[in-house]
Each structure stands twice: as structure tokens, then as C-alpha cells.
Length: 252
Image (cartoon, rainbow, N blue to C red; front, side):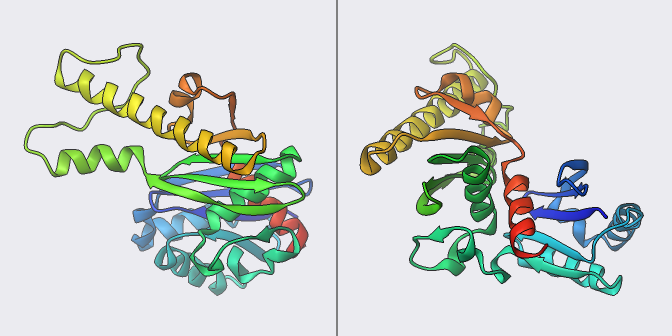
């Protein structure tokens, strides 16, 4: 039978149906705010639940209200719904953090997805609502991470709190500065975030005295890949891979 897993983020919700071999066969992605539309929710799960699914469903969620809404709906259809932090994650990764409850489930999934897929020290940089850096070392130790403002959120906040600066779409460019407002904004965000990412990566590497496989994920990964000083790769399914691994080990 197939398995349903989900990643509930501040901006987007991603649902994936995986087969018996835990390979993704169908994906659904939509804005998180849509989940409060009862008709949308009903039609979405009417489509998804046509698949023959196992009774256990696993979510990573950083939005409690959205998770509760989905959980309530699925329980009505006799499914058992779990959230990552309800499980004994310590069985598969050691979390060296001050307060486990404060750590986002998506970041736990990123660390687990990275380490168990690449079998080495990993630094996962996730371009989500926030830009997060998560460090996982052999033999499966989550060291901690960094949370910085998200690119898109920063663009919108700058527009919201100024009279004349527009919202713009960040793009790749070789221009170091601009001769008009949008080009100047683009240069500021591109090179500003490139510098932020390079600097944080360098400091983490120096502090821990380790080489890391750097994995980029999220909406802006493709834009920043070519501009970073250190070699990196893109894996936009890293969160899903982590959720799948947790499901296999702790729910199966």
C-alpha cells in the first residue's frame, strides 16, 4: 500500500504519496493559507484518499493550526496522524540542542534526510520563509544551526515598510550594482545573501574543523548555487527524504 507524508511550512504545504519502495509517485503543493478553506480541503483529500493508503500518516509541521486542521480531517477518515516531534527521533539522530521543542520539524527532517542519504557530514541551507542552516555530522549528530531572514520575506517587508521600493523577482546577474531601483535592489539581495551564506558557511566549517557536503534546498537554491564560494548541490526533496526515512524507521 502507498504512504502519505506531508511537510507543512509557513508559506507552502507539500504532500507526497510514496509507493512500497518509498519512492515519490505523486506530489501536491499549495499555499498554507488555503488549508482554512473547507471546500478546498475537502476536494484535495477526496482526490488524495482515492489512493490505497496505509493508515499511518506522517507530517513535518511548523504551523500548528494548519496541522490541526489537516489532522482533524484525516482522523475523521480513520487515519492515524503523527507529527515528527511526537516520535522518538533520538533513536535515529542525536540532537545536541538546548530545547528540542523549539527545533522546527522541517529542520530535523532536513538533517535526517541529508545524513542518511549522503552518509557524510552535511550542511543543509534551506531557502524557505526563513533561510536556515542545519549541521549534521557523522555518525548522525545534529549539531545545531542558524536562522536568518528569508529572501522573499525580506523583499516583501522592505516594500511594506518603505514608500517607493517595489516588490521584485530576484534573478541571477553579473551586475555588482544597479543604475535603476530594481537593479539596485536585485544586486543588494543577490550579493547580500551570497555574502551571508558564504560567511556563515565559512564560520561553521572553521568552528567545527570539518568538511561538509553543502546541500541547498528551497525556492532560491537555483539562483544562489553558482555564486557561492564553496561547492554545493541542490536537493529540493531533502525534507521529504527525511520524513520518509523517519516513517520507515519509527512507524513502519
